[in-house]
Length: 194
Ligand code: PRP
Image (cartoon, rainbow, N blue to C red):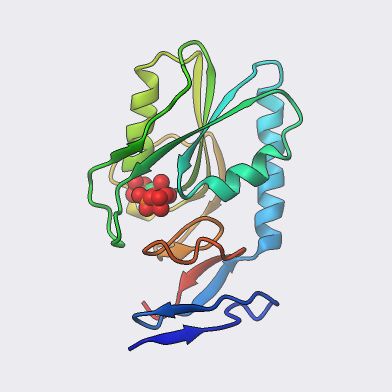
């Protein structure tokens, strides 16, 4: 059955989308909480990187919104690069295989590299990328993730800068999708009727 969801958050945000099932996004972290957390992360990063001209590597697609907000709060020279990795395809469970959809176009050898991720779930995506980057001999390599879901971890991942720890629920919004939907929600939401 097809259902139209309208005014999902009740906070003045209109989202209108045709859904095959009937998931109703409920807010887990508000846009204000996200902003506060991104400011905190930017402050932490700002203690460590000025003068190092770091290369921030965002993992597409999920990290694009976080990256955009984060770098506007970093008041020192840096470079931005993206790599497009995918392991979920159109499903909700990781396929277990990480695909490089589009690789890096910047040399990382000798650079101070900071990976920017939206979520560490099983850890397969970030573990893959950290290994991929480490082989290219950066001067330093760290990970900043907005959210972490440790209950689902399959491989260990060391997180240097962490925004939120999230419960074992599928989350969407602020760049995160379910079957490519919901990335544009300004809050981080769970899909309540799962
Ligand atoms: C999502 C998310 C992370 C990854 C985390 O990406 O953006 O990159 O999964 O999951 P993991 O820790 O289990 O590997 P996805 O493959 O869905 O692609 P997308 O970013 O384009 O949505």
